[in-house]
Image (spheres, chains in turn orange, cyan):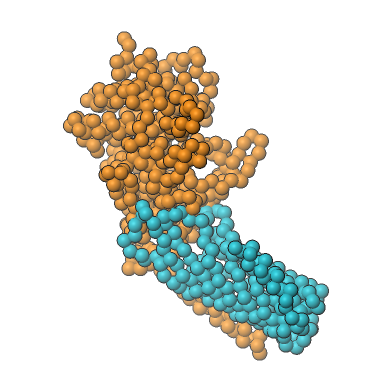
Length: 421
Length: 191
């Protein structure tokens, strides 16, 4: 008797549970997400708001699948090498359905847990990037995906990571990073961390920066990934790649303080704030200062390796753009499109230049004399492809000793900007 | 914190009185379960969430050595997965369940239990600068139906008056598929 009563209660519970159905939402989806909310003009600090926003490119909510992006949850990624936020991948195993948990209230998707909030917010940042692509960068999605098998980036959210070498592989938990995989046209949003403030995956500054790597890959390397091409791995090229990505982030947000909202803590090695080196508008150092060795307990001017080259490049682009706008030579919204239009062809021209005899045989992974040749050839190609009205300002900016100057853009390597006849 | 709770509980077992456990027509037992839910909070890696439980059970001799073991169970989970400092969605869960199990009284005591209950969940949004929220639609509470199947291997001590039972639970929580597996060790004393 007691057994039957227990079984009846159990069956009733299962029946009631099966009857409750989840509500459905439809395109265009509106959801509570984390959104970029402007910049403090005095401090260059970014602000964010948890608010209701409508997605423009999301077609399938539960699959987080849209016109140009699909986010999968988890998956397994083997990594051969991480260069900052660029990844050289090994094997890859697809992730699973996002398994979002939400409720619908007045047509608005309300996340019920942090992971759902983070994934929806991450998608919204990419949605913003694609929606404003033409306006900000002067390019179309069709042109961006030229050469790709589909017009869609795949994005892995918090995948399982294995670090691979020739001898072994080891499972790793990587946090505090977001990355672009040029070989597979994927974005990786690594696992959240209690050290973060604004989640990296939901920060438009970070997402737009990673998107900037895709732009560099498309227009400098013509979308190709060739691990035997030394310039794909070259230290200084990685720096210039980071610099363009920072500038594209600035183009979307107006803030040059890329990291601080998410990562605002000190490097325990020397006490300097890790976000300072990437704050290219406010924190200024020259190429010569970047090369100078530190003495005793002195803090390095920049300890971010090739990121330092990136910061100098991003700052140069920013300074040149401001100068051009203030001189009424170019409207602010015209600079980024002109910059991107000038990228194709630079690499081919670099490869046609004779490489110095003392250059490393393979791509270098640390600073060295060859960086100056790489930087100079890149700037040569970029400046001559920019509109004629902008070239003098660009030359003045990048040849200034506060920028690359004669150390990073040596006159012997210049083909523009007062090149020797 | 979890280690301290476990240590205190284990020490208190020394002071349990000697009561009959199985081998009687009707017996009662109370106990505590140190349980961890394996929850899929991160993309691929699991989050192990400590969820202590209290339970009360009674035994009915169906046909010795097989006993029917209905029971009641409550638990509370407060641990949160790792989240950034400026944005979090905090969940706490209070669960009340009823269950019925079959137990085989031997030198070890295997059991199979089927249960159902309600999970009272409270969700709280947490935001800090530089994030601002123009409204809080995320915080709230809900009741979710829970069903589970559990297997255990009991180790009777003190002539069966105390039962230590490592267990594995397969569960289904309505509208939440993050956690389908839990494991733990139950310790109960009969009276």
